[in-house]
Image 1 (cartoon, one colour):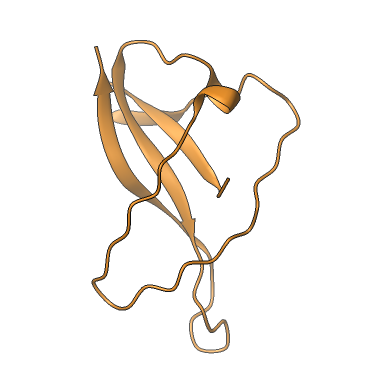
Image 2: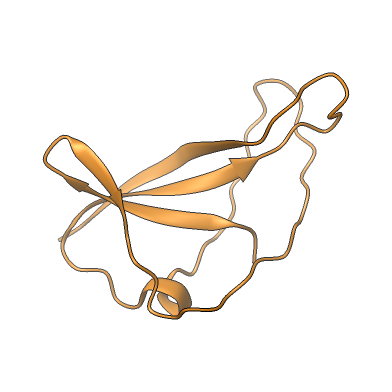
Length: 85
């Protein structure tokens, strides 16, 4: 499973959802995408967050440059928003 986190919208603010387990980890997998290319990754959040309550959510993914000598830093970006009724 690749790194992800889930945030829930409360008013105008996004708040990270608390995990239901204390110790967990992710595989550090890489995907090579060219500029403006997209991909889909299926995420099963239940093992980490349990059943989510009604509300507006978004998935946060970690993005790192392929060549750290020319592009420094790791970025955490919202990648998908969804609603649970």
